[in-house]
Length: 419
Ligand SMILES: [Zn+2]
Image 1 (tube, rainbow, N blue to C red):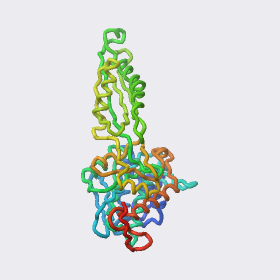
Image 2: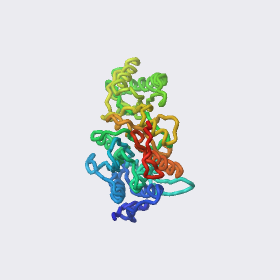
Image 3: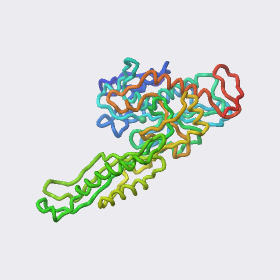
Image 4: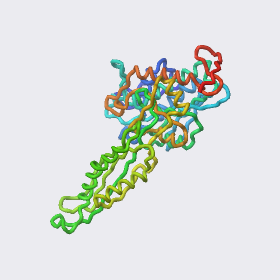
């Protein structure tokens, strides 16, 4: 039985107690274990290299999966970072595949206490509790429960993928999308308060630069001030352009937004600045491409008489997600999870990337995005338990299409022809 180093929350991981990979008795116990194993995205781990990376959490889940007789595979992503694939095969001939895909990384911590799980007043606290180890726990616990049962979904394969790097460049989902097997539906784990999300915004990060002409600070008439040019552009972006965006609305997502988040310009007070740059975050709607957005920004710059250069800071596609909610497999998921309608989300996540590979994607998970990335991140225990029950009910109902429906009360095959 494998043993894993975990944080005590007091000191370094190397000085820690050990968590045995014993099958957790409840989803709460599983989530507590996951919170105590640091998996900070290396982009945010700072000087704590010993807390960086998803490998320890991945190892913990891998051993639990092996003990339960599930098939496991690691997919190399970058350096030593790997996606974890765990498969529960169909008992009979596979006619469909469902993917459960939460990410394993978290954002950084300010305080080692955030790596201790704490249960208080119906809330479980700790880094990743809601984003998104809560979803990892709900999905993985459901899978272990199904593996434990002698009866399984007859014609459905369930593939759990623990993705790396969602919080930074989504390298895990990009690598997965490149090798993604055909699937009927992918459920991406993120805190959606157990609402079924079929659309989320895209997220472009762009650098815009203005160029001026340097001159002595005492003779500004001899130069051209790049900061002044940028000031005109920033004003136009944050007022007229932001208002224009509000006029185009998506039924689930509302309108696109723009935020000027960074401005840097000039060198010293006695020089006319010859350069200024801003970084903008432009949240997009389905149907908007990067080149559409860049063309709009150039048009705004022209209206205020400013010449600009634009650089894409992401260098990777970050388009919006829009899944057709009338698809029968999406309708079935909505029904089995007790929902009547679908929702949109403002945040960007792995769903758009896996969706681009041709797999219909929904985003679903316990917890509320309002608690994500906060210093005292928490998840409601009620939401965690309910989410696990609903996922289990959904997975137990598969396959929803075809001639047979698995009946949870017996191993009897029930003919339904339900679609
Ligand atoms: Zn997340």
